[in-house]
Image (cartoon, rainbow, N blue to C red):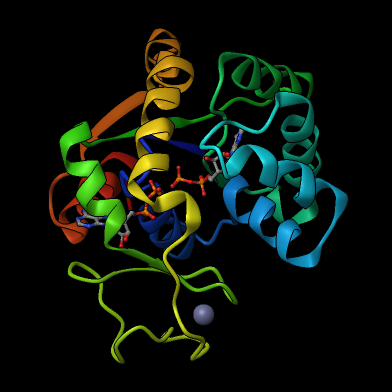
Length: 214
Ligand code: ADP
Ligand code: ADP
Ligand code: ZN
């Protein structure tokens, strides 16, 4: 099963993608996580990506597309995968489509997690991330068992720099300009499925599994 997750920053793509990956036993590929891992490791890619991420802008397609194409060509992706945060532009979607069709493959579903802008800012200000293992929490909706400490690796949680309200506003406008057109794109391709992302995260997951099937 090959799935992509669409939705505004903070809509809950990562939260749902992680659960889908576990249930269907497919890799969860998050471009945001890949960039952050590169940043942490001090790679050239990480340094370049940071310049854009800090401003709430998209990393250029030239730095993003090949990275994803290499990742999905790996052995563990042969039964499918879930892409979280890619594609984010029409050219990225086109590159993905071409790479897949060259192998006689196609995406199965594009799941749009729909959350209005007014919910996003509050949701993002409560998001906390583990700088060590990348796990995501929310101070109200997905609190760790020990305050501000990662359940999985015991590292102190942080508020991502790009989750501060000024940057979130910018990311939302970038989303509307560059990413939202993908909703129409995948609707035309006949694979768009929309879920109401304002519901409780367990309910959102149920809606998604109803779409994907057991
Ligand atoms: P969120 O899901 O909260 O929007 P991500 O972790 O997916 O955040 O992405 C963080 C940042 O990484 C984005 O704001 C952008 O700068 C960069 N990024 C992630 N994926 C892509 C992509 N497919 N194309 C361009 N930039 C990306
Ligand atoms: P995205 O990957 O789309 O940027 P995340 O999955 O990181 O979004 O979720 C953003 C924040 O909102 C996180 O703090 C997460 O714990 C929380 N969250 C995710 N889904 C829900 C939901 N259905 N209701 C309330 N909070 C949620
Ligand atoms: Zn952790």
